[in-house]
Length: 365
Image 1 (cartoon, rainbow, N blue to C red):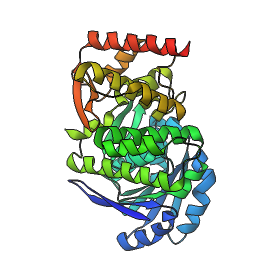
Image 2: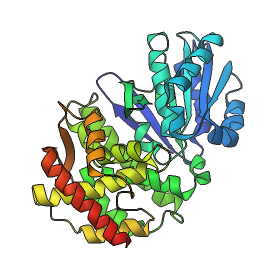
Image 3: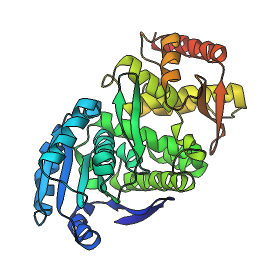
């Protein structure tokens, strides 16, 4: 087990990473929450069927309630959020209760937002069960979706701890591994050229990745995320760099339909596009052909899905919470490890998007 610490202006908390770390949770609760009155474990249908009974056994010494939500982005709706709060009220949770998010990024976002708003805030703990959640579980961003945009209703609300049990990752389908690993690649690109080179030289398959390599990659990703959050908890500056690939990625998710493409796969298409923009707007010296070939070897698509237009994607990007005054801003790279936030005029963005769409269709043909 490795223990990392995230230090923000509002809280310091541990991130426990390793195989079997969930066995340490009961002891952590007894030590840090001696007046704990009850627990509410929020999980989804898929994860709950695999791991909920085991967690309930580990936490049998505590008054415990559970609530199971739909898997994926369907968990992050107003209706499900309301149902979770209704459950908390019916089970008589109070300000000495604690929420546990057992699941991927969607469950963590929902459970964290419920904890942030129930009785004006009760503590919660993240227990990620996906690779993607190594990123979303750290940093305190919690939210639900609105039909007009992803994560539009939310808060900054830090967990009390993150228990990242790598045993949970064994059951992940390869599509979910691919989705999560996109964030690891993003973290390397914005922060650490040596780490990026390590990924290129060591990770050639997400189906057969060795546990020691996976733990090294995830631990480094969490460290990068933690260091950035420590500098900028509320995303007024450098934390925005973590959005590399997300401006277009979120637009693809929303326009294509949540659930039709995974978050990480959409973000990876956004990263490829951002690198293309970086070449033209910031003279990035980077072999995008080799990069795209590596990605395809890992199973990623590198082109925007068919049927999506530049105009509709730009409209979605303008609805994104990162846009300011209806102006679209992208995280681009001057070089690997040196990101820069860049506002792009609609006419320029439209031209590059149309070229990217055409290049994608040609590659598919």
